[in-house]
Structure formats: structure tokens, C-alpha cells
Image (cartoon, rainbow, N blue to C red; front, side, top):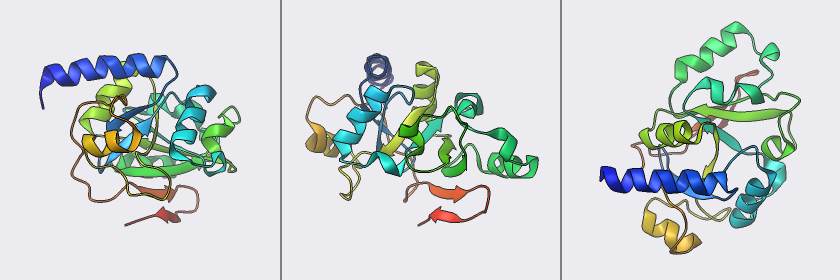
Length: 190
């Protein structure tokens, strides 16, 4: 990876995020679309791009727990369950956890949970740390279409000038597993 290209694209993507817009970025297994989870305007742009229902909720990805804990009702998660999450983090595991009452509806959808992941992917970590908070993480594609695996596919799907973090996807073959931390139910698996 060319360090200058990465740093230039990182700086640009953080500006785009701060302006309440959507970016594409490499994740563990594919390119993702992301935006500021605290901006209803940005999230609505993302949902329109993907043609995705707000009722489904969205995943939050972070480089550290402090970036997501404000969305979580920690009083409803036992120490044992919390430790279980941290055994899998950082890594390609998304957990459905009880949502804090202040978590915005555009994150939870029609549920009382929020989906969260702490990533170990270099690009995600740098992006979240540079932005200073968690990001929305959803596959870079139109709903029900194949996710984008290359920058070229992102540009073909969303336009040649779409804001993109210049980096490589990880080595995972499938999207992150989604596990309900309260009942242990596997929501999405390979």
C-alpha cells in the first residue's frame, strides 16, 4: 500500500465524514460504506445509496470500546457476557447488544439492540481513530446485490468520484458473524 495515497485518502475521507457524507472503505472481507453514526442526515444519505430500509438497523464499527459504549446499555450485559465479547475483539465479530435509550433510531431500526464491532483491520482502525469515533459499517453495494471487493467495483456501483479510503480488504472470506450477546443466538454466519 502506498503510504502517501493512503494518508491523503484518509485525510479526505475524514473531511467527507465531517461534512455528513458517505465514504467507502476496506473492511475485513469487502468494501464497506460508512458515515457518521451521530448524523441522521448522513445515515439517510447512506440508506438512500444502498436502497436499504431504516427498519433494519445498522452496524457500528470502532477501533476501541470507548467509541461504541455510549450506544450500549451496559447495565443489561453481565460481566461474563462482556468478557465473552472482548475474547472475540478486536476481530470480525459483530455483537447485538442492548441499546442505550439515547441510541438513535436510525442505528437500532425496529429493534431494542445495536450491532457493534471492534475491528483489528488496519484501515478501519486508522479511520475511526482519525475521525475520533465509530462509523456505520455496511457492505458497499445496493441492497441484495453482491458486495464490492475492489475500488473499481465501488466506483462502478457508486460513481467514479465516490469518496474511497485507499487500502486493501482483509483476509476474511465472509462478512462478520453477528451474535446476539444476550441469548447467544447466531444471527449471521458463513
